[in-house]
Image (cartoon, rainbow, N blue to C red; front, side, top):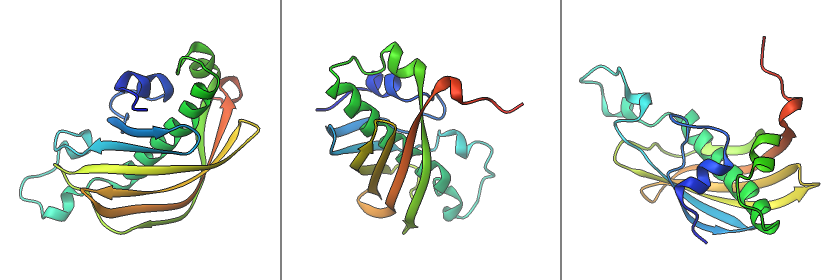
Length: 168
């Protein structure tokens, strides 16, 4: 199965400019997902950089690589659940009542950087879901086929929207 961009927006609770998954290349519900994020010099993280900087200053921020991986994991977990339940992904009951959160990342390692013009690909595997509210995943990220990032374990939780309060 290959969901489209609207499907991505229906499942994750963020919008531009923080949607960091451009395409789902492959989805095996309940098993794994492969997603892509094209790094562009037009991304907001590059605004305001001075000219003449060394090439390494144009590395895509690692925090955004981690966020993009997390969004891919959310798509795998929430998309698998919606498909299993024969729901329209992102139906009001999915999107408005629940919020996906990353609980922890363990055994993470960066082994490179991504730069404008390259495509970041995440492969995320779903290992277990407990009571529909906690998921355990792992995976790898590449930049134009080169190893970039590895996650030994991502623990994600799904909480009722009303139980999460905004800071004062």
